[in-house]
Length: 193
Image 1 (cartoon, helix red, strand yellow):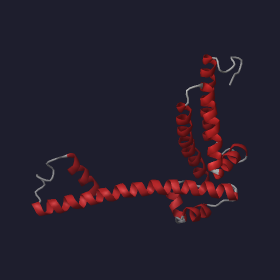
Image 2 (tube, one colour):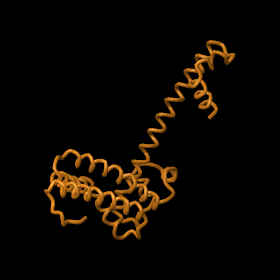
Image 3 (cartoon, one colour):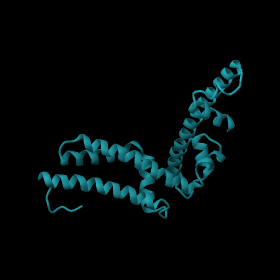
Image 4 (spheres, one colour):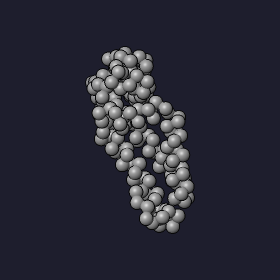
């Protein structure tokens, strides 16, 4: 920790090493060691991020195949290839994993939905693109589709806020397309979303 602080001090002040009172040899050794520590911190952050996503993806598989209530943290850890305790570095419990999954997937999927919709010129093409991609996403990731279905209907709504947010985002996107289509004259004016 103090090395990290010293490293930040050195990086933030051009002459910190010059006025440190250390010999030139020690300044070089210290600088090289701090550079190495900096690289290690960056690698560790990347690995932690990778493990987070790895655990989420493993949890989806386990939840979809075993059922949420029959799944255990140990099964998720085994599927992710990590120790049971590693799960608790990222999540409080199994419920927390589910909530994080819906947050993560909502962002990921809706970025793709928005990009696909924006590629089309007309509202009808935008709607076609959205529906096509929606179905393709569920075909591509069947475990996600199962978890979404179960999550919206059976899991005592543990991730209710995330599911509500996801539904609102989807409905807002469709409403935007329909309203634009109504202005273009390609969608009936009496259609309300």
